Image (cartoon, rainbow, N blue to C red; front, side, top):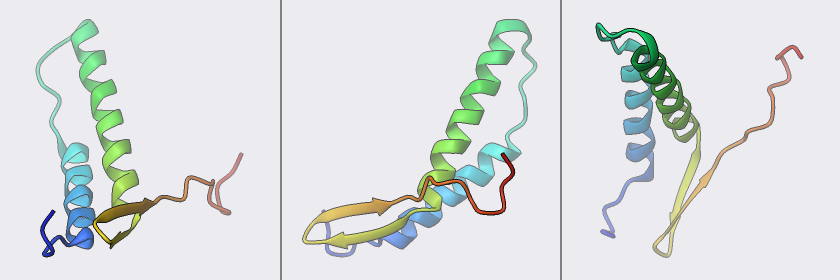
Length: 77
């Protein structure tokens, strides 16, 4: 990997992808295809948003992503 790799730029690209998934229009499909499209969009958003929230470090050629998956203190159970 290049020495010019910028982990923060990667994080920002994933944040943009998460925003794009949220804005994605629902195609004119119905039934099972519609449910599959919606489920895939939910998974895409979750994956992109988790990486967008990560703390990234790039040391000695190793990319480390630290993602806090603990519930926030202000969430209700």
